[in-house]
Length: 222
Length: 222
DNA sequence: CTGAAACCTGAACCAGTATTCAACTTGTGT
DNA sequence: ACACAAGTTGAATACTGGTTCAGGTTTCAG
Image 1 (cartoon, each protein chain N blue to C red):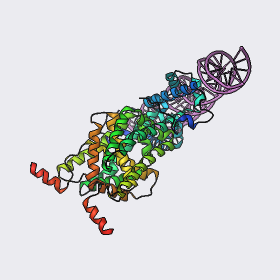
Image 2 (cartoon, chains in turn green, blue, purple, red; image 1 turned 30 degrees about the vertical axis):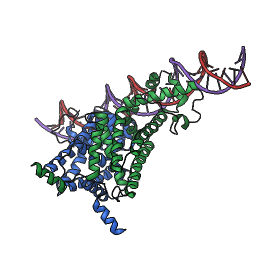
Image 3 (cartoon, rainbow over the protein chains, first blue to last red; image 1 turned 180 degrees about the vertical axis):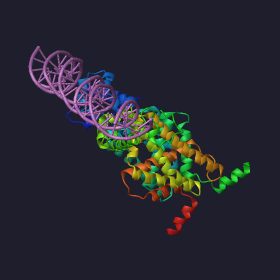
Image 4 (cartoon, rainbow over the protein chains, first blue to last red; image 1 turned 60 degrees about the horizontal axis):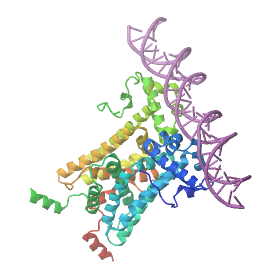
């Protein structure tokens, strides 16, 4: 459930300054602390998890923690950033390669649920940011919603979706995805990500109102 | 966790047992503590808010707190329950009196956003339950999603909406509502609840895919 | 080799705060 | 009036856990 990302802008190593490790040895220690923190925060939440839990799991001394992070809050901030970027990077390619916009949203949701199943700690970490580090929390969701709104608008310009797309649509779709991820990714896996994404795609495409077509079809059956 | 379901759920007085106040005076004190707790937890979060903050705001002594609640967690539990019931009770009538199902969902969202604007602390309290009292958190959302799914299914039986409604639809709609409430109820009020609900209702009704009709219309304009 | 910088260590410090308790006050039924 | 239950009080207790620090170890450039 851990990760080992390359040096991206969000790599906590580059954020800091005086605290950044200067040695290969130091880099390994910091990585170990970060990975341990992800597990501890994910399992027990921010307040339950203690620094000594983290350092114990990382296999280093308590004091070493403060060689790389200024405070408990600081590791947490670093983690939120890390997770937020990881989701985006995992979902993006599927969206890019979809043939049309509905298919893109479908693929995005499918991949999101898959990602969540492999990283169940993501909800505990990002959601708890609302209390520990509100700025990151806000940024994560505002950015995500904005990304959705922008790609819908582009699709509207291409004539693929109705022209009245707005920020409201972006937030609505994000909300659906977040809760479907919680229900079918974290809480239980009783449906395949693909099935769920298909249902949502259909709803997005034609709505849920019963149309004359539906009526005709059910009359045949009856 | 949840036991006495039949008791007036939003009356916290009945939740407790041995701790329930037996006097008018006691009832007032407990109410004061509960209200103060809602404000403190809402403003500062569970862990930041201290019992003495709460009792100070309520204007009672520290010890009085333990006359009515077993622990800090206990008040929190009581509050989550209280808020959850309050939303439901506020939104229900609007839904019941709607002429059709799409209108019902529209009215529900509109009223939800209105409620949130008057009770911004609701997000901090219910969301923090994920960490403080996971059982209540789960129960709140599972119940809410289920309520939506059930009423959609009824509408499907009446022939108002497509027949393939499922739990997925319930969770999707709830997710939209929750995030729209956060964005347009708590974070800012730059759109009217009514406008937002209308946009969502249209999306729910006909989807976002551009239809031949839309095409024809835009050609007239062009 | 050598000295300084980087790193590691964990006991000790300390602030905050949930919870307890024994004495005191108020309300009420008889 | 009386007595007992209900309610109130806030200092004292107990404990958790973040943060510091003084001293030891490892690394590596020169």
